[in-house]
Image (cartoon, rainbow, N blue to C red; front, side, top):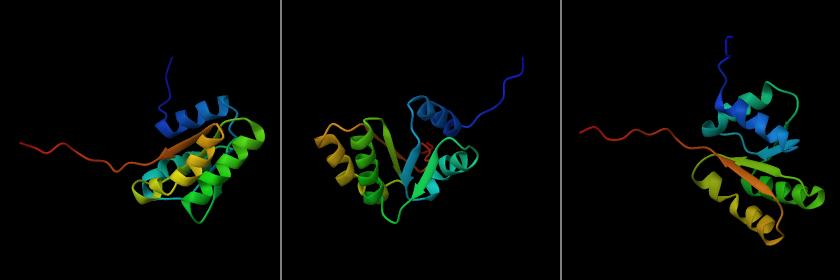
Length: 112
């Protein structure tokens, strides 16, 4: 039996589907482009593009509060990820289930 090769982003989306996630809110960036590509290749989870990461986190927080289901926001690394904090804090204060997915730049150990 031949196994197909799958990207990590595809597996993440499969798991999110099992949790009932319908939307991911975020800003497109280079460190999460693999996730964005995987979202574009399927029809179960919709990507909602916003202009600022804090809006994405607050939108996910609002969805989680209204539905009681897991909501997801995403941002690139560094300042993009830190911009999620206010919305995530809002969700945490009301015990709303929100998952933040952020990117990370590849790095290598220094050679000796």
